[in-house]
Amino acid sequence: MRIIARCVAPMARCPGCVTGSSRVHSRYRRRLADTAVGGQTMAIDLTVRRFFCGTAECPKQTFAEQVDQLTFRHGRRTMSLQRVLEKIALALGGQAGQRLAEHLAHPVSGSTLLRLIRRLDLPPVGDVAVLGVDEFAFRRGRRFGTILIDMETHRPLDVLPDHTADTFAAWLQDRHHVQTICRDRGGSFAEGAQRALPGVPQVADRWHILHNLAIAVEKAVRRHRTCLAPPAPDPGDTETGAGQTPPLLDQPAPGRREQTTRARWQEVRPLFENGMTLQAISRHTGYDLTTVRRYARATSAEELIRPRQRTRTDLDPHKAHLLQRWEEGCDNAETLRTELAERGYTGSRRTVRRFLNTLGTSVLRQPPPAPTPAVPDVVRWIIGRPENQSESANQRLKDLCTRCAHIAATCRLARGYASLLRRRDGHRLQGWLAEAEQSEITELHSFAKGLRQDLAAVTAGLTTDWNSGAVEGHVNRIKMIKHQHYGRAGFDLLRRRILLA
Image (cartoon, rainbow, N blue to C red; front, side, top):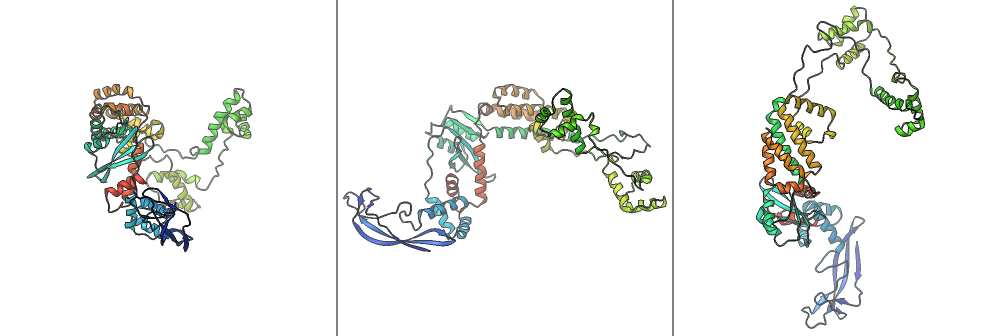
């Protein structure tokens, strides 16, 4: 589609001296690419004028008029299309952006999209009160960079080409408006901040501190990993004595509905006996009034539980024989069906098979031994919040601490520090460090030693609300940009995509 238009403004302002002029020098036609309409490319054939500049001191003798929000100097696209392509380039880069632009009926090359990113002006840094800093990898394990974040607005401020103390100190030089620096446990950032802004409070990130504790706990647990295996069950410790035949399981274990019925009766019946009305009980428990009346009138939970009607089958006289053969190791339904036919059984093999399936899932068979927990699982049980752990995990950790005094001491100290961290009780840190250094856990000795070397920042991290969560979010976004193959330009293009996105 093509639109033919011309400028009709009576005058235009000179871009050099901002003086208005109405003297037309000449006219010419500009072809501007515009955003697509209905999936078709759009072009505007715009006739513009060139004016004389009447100011003698102005270096421009003539100038071309520009249409506000439509054209810009030397532009062959409208401003709206230019902004669309810039957003595509910042989000996807060169090749991926080129493919998307083609689907949107804006054909453009990947190199052009990269040039659009380079032409954009970087936002000013401005005054920053709380600065966040962290490193990221250009090449994992080899080359690292640094990202700086405004912790109050979560806006990226700058990206540095390395993570050395000299580069960070040079960036902080003359930026005396920085009042707090949030960082990880890295020594280079602490050294650079101390060198450029001595006396500015530094806050260590709580996640990194907890991660360092998890590493120490993992080393301590791994050193005693032989204690993780649960003790083997005693073969003689069974409900039935030697030579006795265990009883048949005619009464299965109570199901969920029966358990729910008993729990509701135990909740409603005491309230009714204490004189509370049925309507009050209904409002208190949230149950329907009919349900409350039925539970309140029952003198026991068994009255509410419908007894299971068990029909007698042809297999009942032969179940003792099947149980004996099952204990001997025979679980072939066809073989057992043949044996029972000689004893007068006239039923089908499928009925025998169903009964054998109930034996396989019943308590007649000894349960398999509990698996040995993995070291990372034990660390998660110790470091994680106890209320967020399952009952089985808490019980297994309790049994493990009973078997191993070393792991019990590690669990007590680690949970004490985790509680101190979550409650922001930085004033209790000195007491915990003294207790950890007096214990026999050598791994926690090293952890406590590292905390003492960075005691001021760690104490601030356990006291204030600041942490490096926003910085870690931007580091993850950098990883996403890198996975998109951020282009041939290397650091300069990555830096612009981070700061302008």
